[in-house]
Every structure is written in structure tokens, then in C-alpha cells.
Image 1 (cartoon, one colour):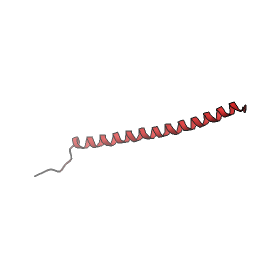
Image 2: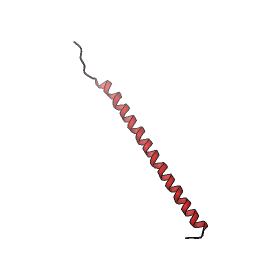
Image 3: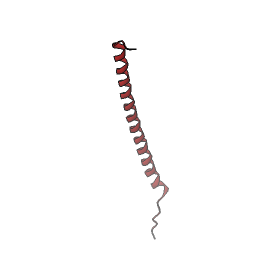
Image 4: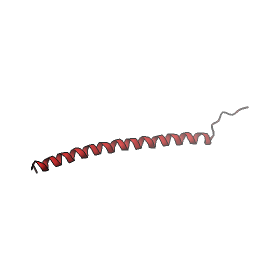
Length: 57
């Protein structure tokens, strides 16, 4: 007679792989948001420097 139950030790690695995948996705999303923030910061700096050069305050 064979048992077809799944032991806890075979489920834990699958859960850990899912958690690692979620952390990787969150890291990539944080990188995406950081790049968007840097692009906005560069644009704001360009506007600021342009206003300072042309004497508009």
C-alpha cells in the first residue's frame, strides 16, 4: 500500500521559492520606481538650472 501524502519537507522548499520570487519582483519594482524618480529629478533640475541661467526667478 503506497501513500500519496505530501510531507511538510517537500512543501517548504516550494513556499520558499515563491517567497524568493516575490522578493525579486518587489526589488525590480522598487528599481523601476527609483529610475522614474531619478528621471523626474533630472527634469526638475534642468528646469531649475534653465530658470537660473535666464534670470527668471
